[in-house]
Length: 467
Image (cartoon, one colour):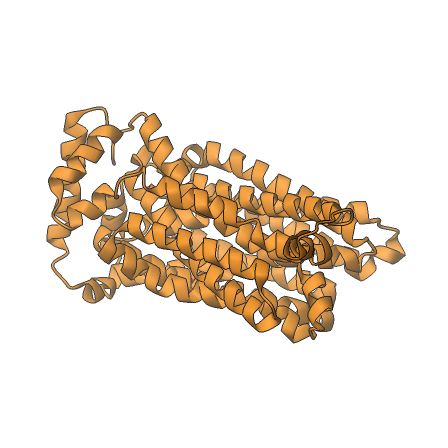
């Protein structure tokens, strides 16, 4: 196990920059929730078309995930992040001015590709530049940025909806974007953080572990000397990485199919896809619509969704502070148990709430509790787990495979949630989410190692022994 190393301001800076990709992920994912009813009404969409509007970006995300790992392994983590920034910027501008529903879908898919890329390369980059003793906390900065993006989207939707009622402009395009069709403004505002992300990436170096893989030891040593205070630690990191590379004599695909590593990939895929069927993205995508079914107005539902975003962000801060001390697995045990209880209570509300005299405040409390337990457990650990489970040589490729599973599950939830709410009823939908929590907890309990405090090379050795 690697000795504890004090975290430097340089590592924090690099992690924050990479985490900005998470903000764009969160904003692009959550902004859709405030536009569904408007877009559905304007274009006369059916239930399935409405689901396609939400889910189309996830098709892009799946595509982005599929080649993100290979791109980052070949071109480097930094250049791949730059590509994602370009995709986010063009998507936001395209959505703001899309003349019809088909073009809106195309630009949403472009943004989805950006989401897929950052979901792989940003946590991967952070894990590779962070000391083992603080790696969970640093990678969790990415998830924190995702929740800040969620909250930013909810607040922007709420503000822009109110702003649009009194907005007038002699410019017809501005009047359309920020007045009569405010969903365009909600989607288009993402241009600002996307351009900021593009610019600031130029101020960070390439991942030192990737440089070592490419034989650029001298450049990697210079970067590592800014991360670690002791020269001996720099030499240790370089030697550890080179030692594991020398033992990985197989090709990338053959190494991926090594029994122990293949086991890790399967486990990563399982927890990635199961996490999506535990309801969190259904709440984040369709929260306003779900609240409206309980009798709230669209304005109140957006306000409630903003509260959910605030709890999501605040709880992620708490998880970030304790993940390296408490450990990944214990957070899952506590959090998923709380998720099950919260989901069952939400199901009871929709099943018997009216006869039991339950108010919408009770529903809000259950949703906030659910988000609290989710943000403090599976949302906090998933990208940490995936970014540290695999060997350096194929980390991007293996993360792409696990990430593909995650986005397939997210797409299915995005597409099926409207259908489930309509046909399985809200109660049945949330009872199903509660049931899906059980296999997730069992997999983490029985098959996952505790990775807190271990070097990436130590984790790789663990999986290679599991043949």
